[in-house]
Image (cartoon, rainbow, N blue to C red; front, side, top):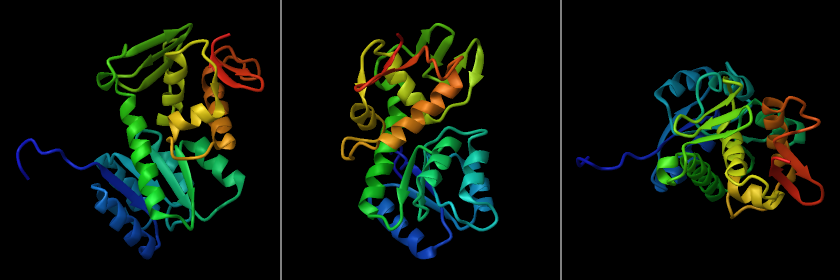
Length: 235
């Protein structure tokens, strides 16, 4: 490799179906990514220590299922996580998002859509870097502080664990206090302009974030619902 060459972004796949891994690996590598694959949750958890840029996790895997894997990964890491699963109930999706996944793709899937969602997740993760935007790296409001350099959220000086998607959502709203965002606008910012609005996904992220930052999630001070329109930051 030439000096100064840009290293490809690393994608970690945890999936026990070798055919699915082969398809994902083919399309992701053709899109310019470096791909690592594990066929059970325990091996994937060890591989996460190499700090991939994004993870694609199945739910039903031997040794450690995807839910437990996400729970363990989120104790230390903030890289984007996308679930790819045949489990199609809303409750399955909500559990995954609650545990810290940023997106959920159902099987059978279009490999090109997976690549697009990977690209979108990495783009919004990178957008949290203020050096790329020229924005103030520290945002404060009341007892909240977001350090976008280190991708950390604090409430009353105590660090609050959030997912990259939750942090992206909060940063977007904090940078535009009082502005009302529709669910479709939020979805476009979080997931990408190529996808239709998914109200359930947005509501889960809003609910999770409220539970973490609001003194009373039922009477939110920061993430305010504007009935019939969407959400805004502040009253």
